[in-house]
Every structure is written in C-alpha cells, then in structure tokens.
Image (tube, rainbow, N blue to C red):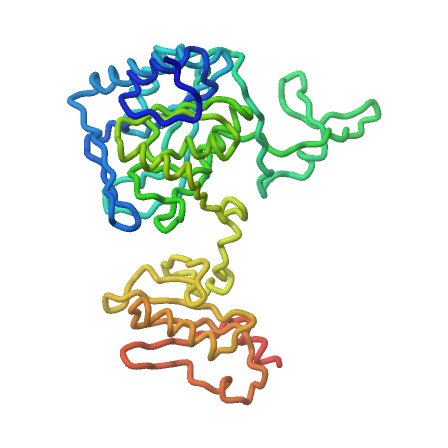
Length: 404
C-alpha cells in the first residue's frame, strides 16, 4: 500500500517508509537523535503533559548503523531533483557526515549550514554552544534550488552595488571599464545570495509557537529550507517529525507532507498543531538585531574604565555593572531626551525594586527647563530605604550648563 500525502504515520520510520513510493519525495528533512547519550524530556506550557524520548546508544557504531539503514531507504524515496537536509550538532556531526557521504556520495554534498542563535549562558567550562549543523545533500546534480537573496551588509561599499566588476589577467577582481576608461554601471542587483550561516532566533521560552516538546525547532528555520529546494505542491517528508514543525511549515507553504514518529504523543501533538497552526512572528528577523540595541552607548562612555553589560529594550536600565555591590546588581540608567530628571529617577527606582538592587547610577543628560527650579538644585544623591541612587552629570551637559 502506498501512503498518500498529508499523512502522519505512527511507527519506526525504517518500516513505515516502505509505505511511501520510491522517487516520490522532493525534500526530506530529519532531526534524528543527536547521540547525546541521555533521555530528553520536557513539559508543555500548562504542565499537564510531558514529552520524552531516549537518545542513549551503546557505542558510535550502533548509532551509525541506525542512521545508515534509514538514510539508505530515504535515498530511494527521493526524486532525482530531490534533496535531503540532516540536522545534527557537535556530538554526532562526524558520524552523520560519514553516513551521508557513504549513501549519497561526497560529490552530492552541497552545503553544511550553520544555524546560529543567541542562547542563555551556562556554568559549563568551555565555549558556549550557539550553533547546530544541517547537512544538505542532493540525490543528483539536477536538484531543485530557488535562489534567496539577503540585504547587503552595513559595511558594503556603495560602488560594489552600482558598478560592474570583472577580473584582470591575474584573476583579481576589479571594476570594469569601457573603451574610454569610465567605470561601467552594474545590472540591477537583488542583494547578497543566502550564505550557509543562518542567524535565526531559537524559540523563546514564552513564544506562543512553543509546545513543550524537547528539541522543537522554529518554523522560521523549516520555512527557509522548504522555500530553498521545493516548489508549491511538492512533497516533504520528515521521518522523525517529533512536534510536527516540518509538517506545519510545509502545510503553511502549500506543500504536501508526510510525517513519521514512533511516539503516539508526538503524532497526537503534530496533528493538533496541523489543525490549529500557531506561528511566532520574529521581530528580530523583521527588524534586525540593530533595531533592539537602544542602550545609550555614547552616554555610557563615562563608564569606559568600568566593566558593564549594556541592556536593551528596558525603560529603567541601560547597563548593569559586572561587579555587584553587597551581593546585589548595580543598575545604570541614562536620562532620555523626553524624560525629566524625576521621571528618569523613578524609572530607575522601579527597576531597582524589581531587581533587588541596592545601588544605582543615573546619568543626567538633559538640562532642566528652568535652571533655578527645584529639579536643577537637587543633590546628586538620592537615598531611599535600603538603596541609593547616584546622579552623574555628563561632561556635555556640564559644559552646556556653564555656558547657558
């Protein structure tokens, strides 16, 4: 029996893939166990359901054999124009790459995609893991590929966009010139071709899209993969579908899907998400990281010789000093243009109460409307029960006040 599209299949993918016709699939994405040697478990937002799966293996050869058997079958399912994307991390990327080279051939390796993201810090000695690997292989060299373009970086020279480039006899890139020696205008450019390093946010713990399944990936990641190598009505297969992200992304993009998992809970969760898909809109992706960097770095220069961490998107805090005061954080706020000194001070005071801070610094940047009023004459020390705020005037403001 051949499985029709838009189905979720319960069982081991090695067996269930026999129900799918050979050469019928356009894209296979799999996020298999990562050889982490532990049991993964997580509860949903309501704390009413726990999802879990084992990722424990006796040795590398057992894991490699597990993957090899299944990826060998996946190759048969792909069309000649199809591609496979295999998700892994540092624990098993050497194993995964070896298996893929053996099954598909190293000549059909297309890219190693680095999915990078910002993560919370940990206490483990060593570098903080902030990326995962996705191996992209094609079945043949006639694979489907849709070019994606990204905006030019801030450092791009304007001439690189407007002027045509060529290569000289030494194969060095130079600006092309006509017979009169004038530079030639470049054709219209769509941007920079998508690279193999993808900066896509990890799912926020509070994101509506998050369902509490261990290793859940963001829809944004799967949407990019699907857009890259498939067209509308193509068939997408996820043989380890877990929470169903691949199937949901395929459905939203007008692709057909087949998801397989041996967990009844995973299949039930995937169906629920397909029935009522929820996608978190990433403001970070829409606006870029720079849009969220609103700490007044220029005003914070008065802390140049003091170690601090800038804080963005917070009304009451612009920085936190690295060194604590009596075991509590020291907060710094910069007075904004539209704030009176009292308003800025109150915002800092509120933040100090919430963060249990005993000392804060307010950087005074704006002159009072009336230099003789009470606000202008305040002491530079504002003390409250159990906490204290030091008011520091910027050099710029100090000079302005003296020449006013």
